[in-house]
Structures are given as structure tokens and as C-alpha cells.
Image (cartoon, rainbow, N blue to C red; front, side):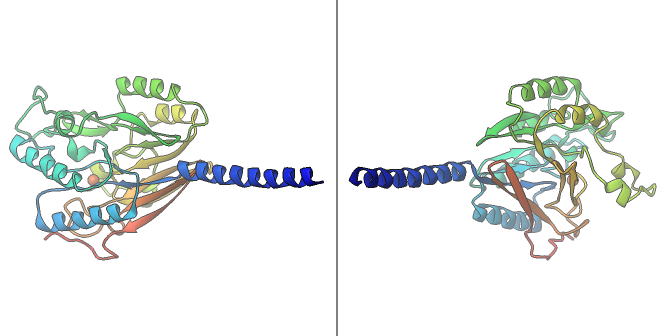
Length: 303
Ligand SMILES: [Fe+2]
């Protein structure tokens, strides 16, 4: 009798220890991160103080890291090394103020000297992603966090001295090899600037004058989507449109276009909703999010 009481006591203690270990294990897998896109930074006092407010807000959230969805600067497409250097240097100074790692993505406004009116040509060392790489590193890469896999793609290329949405063949080969390394059940997040999937064109049909703005979608998206469908892709995080959108495809992969930090490209008021960014909360294999309007509904407008 006494022995069975001891047995029950130790069994009870064992269950308690097991449960608390399981909780610790689950909590250890939880994390949060920020996705912010279309920062369009330039040395301007209003933009500088508004972005400081963004940084302070992010630092107060206690997230593990930040992903920037592109258009870090505004802009370097027309060349001018000196001015373009100063824009990237301004971004780097701001990046240092985050107290967590910031993973960046190539945006169209980050492409150096690609436009017709540029004072450099394609032989320049900083051409296209050259300057971005000099300041921010590889244009596409992946990393793991807890048991999640994150892929950052370069969705931009140049054709006829204009940017297009495209993931080139070298990068497609890399992407296939990168995803082939992970177990099929691993939750995956993909970040890129030009959207793969969006209802933007249905909501705002092109009117002619703004056709260039409506044109960009990733032109080889079919082969990318076909590849991604073979994996447990939970989120595809997109930028460029300065529009907040969440499309749940087959109730599994969420294609989220992340609003914008800048509002209008030149920070002259809001565009398609408040200036803000997304805060993601990951628990095990599940993820939820909210949009943080860092101005509390107030637009940071540059005159
Ligand atoms: Fe943008």
C-alpha cells in the first residue's frame, strides 16, 4: 500500500515535470518578427524623425528580427554615385538603431543607374544591384529561425532600361536547391518586393497614365508558384504596391502585401491606407499578425 502511494506520488511528479518541459519546449519555439516594406528613405528631417518613430516602435515590441521588403532608399535608379551613396549611407545609419537583425530585400528603387537618363551604363560596378550589394550584401539568400525557413528573393531585373518583375534562372536554380535541403514539413516564409500574387489590378484597373505602376508582377511567377506548392509555404511577404492585402490561397499560403512605411513614394501623404508595418507572431507551426499604424492614423507628410 505504502509502495503504491510512493509510486503514485512519483508518477504525479513525473507528469508535472513532463508537462512543464513540453511547455518550455513550445515556448522556446515561439517568436515574433516584423515585416516592413517600402521605406523610401532619404535624408529629410520629417522622414528621419518619422522613421526614428518606426524604429522605436519596433524596438519596443521585442521581436527577434526585422525583414525589410525593399525600396530601402528613394531612389538610385537615375544614377549619380555621390547622391546614391548618401542614400544608402543614410539607410545604414538608421539600420544601426534597430536592436535586432534587419534582413533586407532588393526593391526597384534600390537598383542603381538602370534608367535611360542615368549618367552610368551597365558596365558600372554599382549598376543594378551592385550598389545594393556593396552596402547590404547578397540580393537573395535564406536563413533559419527556430524551426522555420526564411527565403529572401530578388524579384527584379532590367529590360529596355526599365525594371521588370522577374526571378532570373540562376536564382531559380539556387531556390530549387535551397528548398530541396529542408524537410517537407518545415514552415517556409518567402519575402520579395514585386508581388507574386495580388488582387491589386482587379481593385485598381490601369487607367493609362499609371500603367507602369500596374504592370509589374513577377513575369515568371508560374514556375515559382509551382515550386513553392511542393513545400509548406505559410507566408509570401510582398511589397511595391504600398497596399495592405492578405490573400489566403487554399486556406494555406497567405500572400500578404505589407502596406508601406512611406505612404506615397515621396512621403507626400498616405497611399492605400495608413503608413505602417506588419507584426507577426509565430507559435509552433501557426502564425498570426497585426498591422501597426506607427503614426496612429496621422500621416507623416513631406512637403
Ligand atoms: Fe515602393
